[in-house]
Length: 320
Image (cartoon, rainbow, N blue to C red; front, top):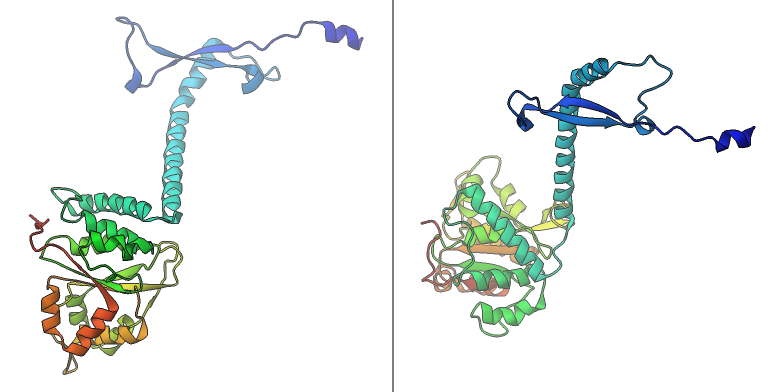
C-alpha cells in the first residue's frame, strides 16, 4: 500500500496571482482609463495560503484583504528600512571610532576627512584646502602624531628645520600669522594614536582663573596629564595632553587680588611634571618674539620642551 501511494503523482502547490494597486508614487498609467496594478504571487508551499483547514476565499475577498492590509505592511516595511539604515550607520561609526590609524598615511587621510567635515560645520567658503603653504606641515604632523621616527629625519626637510633639531619626545609650538589655520590644524590632530590631547584657549583660561571657584585649582588641573574619560574615542589612552591655543594673547591673570603670569606658571609646572609630547602651543608670535618675551631660564626650558614649527610669514589668511 505504501508503495502504491508513493508512486502516485504529488499535487504541486499552485501560485496564486493577485492584483494589487500600486502606490501613488509609482503609478504610471499604461493606457487611458486603465488601472496599473502590481502582481503579487503567493506560493502555498512557502506562504501557508490557502490553508485547507479554513474556508476558501473568493478572488474578490482575497483582493479586499490585501488592499486593507497593504498600507500597514508598507508602513512596517518603511520603519524596518529606517531602523536598518540607522543600525548600519551606527555600526559604521563604531567601526570608524575603533579603527586605529597605524601609519602616518592613515592619520593623514583621517585628518583630511575631519577637515572636510570641519569646513562644512564652520561654513568655510573655500572648504578644507591643503596647498603649498600647509601641506608639508600637515604631512610632518601626521608622522609626529603616529610616533613615526621619520619625523625626526624627513620632518626636518619638510619643516625647513635644521637636521637633528626635531624630537618625538618633545611637544610642539606652532607659530605663524593670524588666520593661517594653526588652531584648526591642531584641533584636527587632537585625536591621534601617539599622544592625544585636549584644546584650551589661553585667553579663556585667564578669564576662568579669576573666578572664585577656579584660581589655583585651574593651575593644578592644567599643570599635569589629564585623566581620559573617553578611552574609546582617544584610542585607549588613560591620560591626555593639552594644546594651549593663542599662547601670548593672554595677559596677567588675577585671582583674589593676586596677579600671576598664568601660562608661564603652567609651562614651568608642566616642565617638571609631564615633559614630553603632551604639551603644545599655538601662537601668532614669531620664535624671535617669544624669545624676547620670556627670560632666559623660561625660554631655555621651552627649547627643551618643544619642537618649533613656523608657518611662512607670507602664508595667506584662510579667514578671507
